[in-house]
Length: 114
Length: 113
Image (cartoon, rainbow over all chains, first blue to last red; front, top):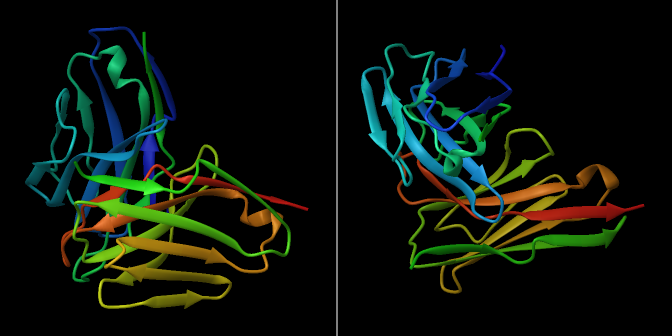
């Protein structure tokens, strides 16, 4: 099992550009989520999905879109990048059917917006 | 406002001693609490879970306590080793069966040989 994979590992964008951060998991997890991690702020939830075709907003959803067409993939789209979106982005997944789910995190994407 | 605070940003201890990390929260009513380890340049890795009706959980050299009256969790690493050096994150889960977590800012632990 590869677990949770994320691409790219690093990305530099100019203000106004768009891009998609990729996330995939091979553990058949129903729940997937995106977090951003900023110094002094901790991990904050952007969007999450409880299964294919179902997504919802987290704490900080503005400026980001998601979709979940398959169980395996959960891409995060930045529509028009802003310097405030400079951050490290983590994708996570967790197994269905348990009450207190541990989350499995990917290795992260470090994004810089100039 | 809602807050999750972890005692200090950085904690240095001597090898062999017990490290104690603190997670305090306000204006949350968590159903459970989790602790994660994060190494530089990597994603967090799950360590331990404790439910609201549990006082203490242990796993090898790790121990976590949960006091819902004090709104605090303590995370202990006994017989610490340099390999335990990492950032440790606490995370609150508000509902059983719901997977959204609220994370603290983390404590960077350094174990000095």
